[in-house]
Length: 152
Image (cartoon, rainbow, N blue to C red):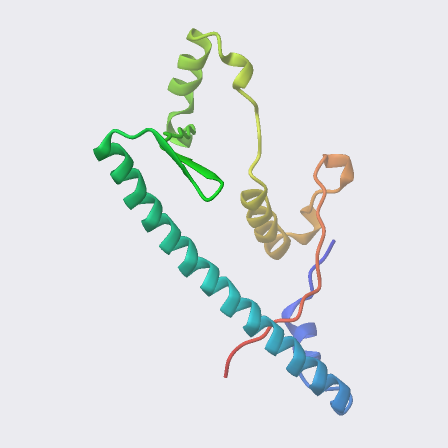
């Protein structure tokens, strides 16, 4: 798989044909939809922040009053503590040793982060496109043609 080089990309920077009204209309609709999605994402972010603050206050009230749960309007609210664990990449040796000592070695898996892999393969594609992996290497790659939009 080869990526388009800069000289070839420059050839396509000049329009080959006049831009039609349909293209302009579709580009306008596309831009409006992207802006609408961005506004919705921002609203969701703000509402999640508000919800997190409300949860923090409610948890503190439950904790300070000693109430473990209560029901209202068909819902039961209760305090809980969730735990999340991960292995720091710099300390995998120690973490794996701990897991093995606790008979938890079945949790240890050899994995590759797909975002890191994609980043590494983009660099290979730019520096040495003939060295890109194929299916025989056990790595699948795909490209997606997208439309980019920048605000003026």
